[in-house]
Image (cartoon, rainbow, N blue to C red; front, side, top):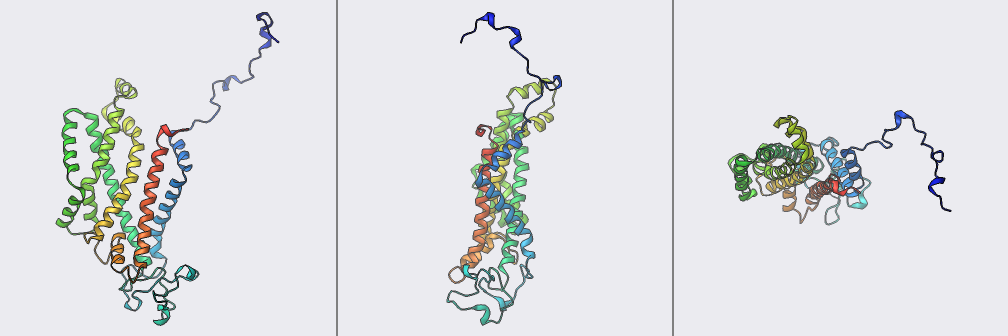
Amino acid sequence: MRYDDADLTDDLFVPDPVKESEAEAIPNPQVSFWRESFRRLLKNRGAVIGLITIMLVSLLAIFGPMMNKYAFDGQDLTRSNLPPLLHGLEWAGFDGTDSHGKDVYEARSLTNAAAWIGTDEFGRDLWTRVWNGTQVSMIIALVAAILDLLIGVIYGGISAFYGGRVDDIMQRIVEVLVGIPNLIVIILFILILQPGILTIILAMVITGWVNMARIVRGQILQLKGQEFILASRALGATNQQLIWKHLLPNAVGPIIVTLMFTIPTAIFFEAFLSFIGLGIQPPLASLGTLIDDGYQQMRFFSYKLIFPAIIISAIMISFNVLGDGLRDALDPKMRK
């Protein structure tokens, strides 16, 4: 059935009954960039598992040493080289027997002094030492990553924002630091100073901020020529306002992702330095020193290497998976 123009009269059209006050209301609530990014992150199962693993390991690093009566440096030679014993998990190998099937606890009359994941050659409880070492490694990595963040953001932001001769000079310094092998600088710095937590942090920060500075510089260079920056400058915004209110907030996504990848790198360097004897010194423990001790005795006491290796692997994999998830979640191009 066809209608002519004469048949289409005004009385056939009735306006939608909407209140005047609600005429311009937005029907759906506005979703912010961070909320939408968080939703995308929650849809990434790998990133969620990585985040849960990091939180679980962090809680155990804080409260794990308090879960038994043994101190991380408490020595008791009567408990030396005890295999793992955990009641209820005997089927999983935590039965207190050595490689020959002998019950070490019964042979030494230590049935009431179970070591959940074993002891070392000095009788120090490995459960306490592993979580105390995790605590030390995480503190070193987090402090080094935060310092890299602060130095890199300030250096890269100044270099990109002012540009010209300032940028040329600052980037030549960065190129010199990039040209020097990172590991050699760290080892030389530790050899000059006494090995310790502060020394390791300072050694990693010397060149660790360079990657963050280059990421921030690239983001600022990309942003500072866009229209909203030109509009803010035309409205009288100062350089400080442009940096802190417009440029850095829009570059925070790549900064967070880079930070997530910096932490496992710092954990790896700390473990490597401790493994070669330039890191944490006894009686303090870190994941690197525990792996070094376990490596030397892995033929007869493999549990000394297995448990710290599992922890450091879980931490590094979780941070890398979480970093990948954050990169996808904070990228507007990934929006469906």
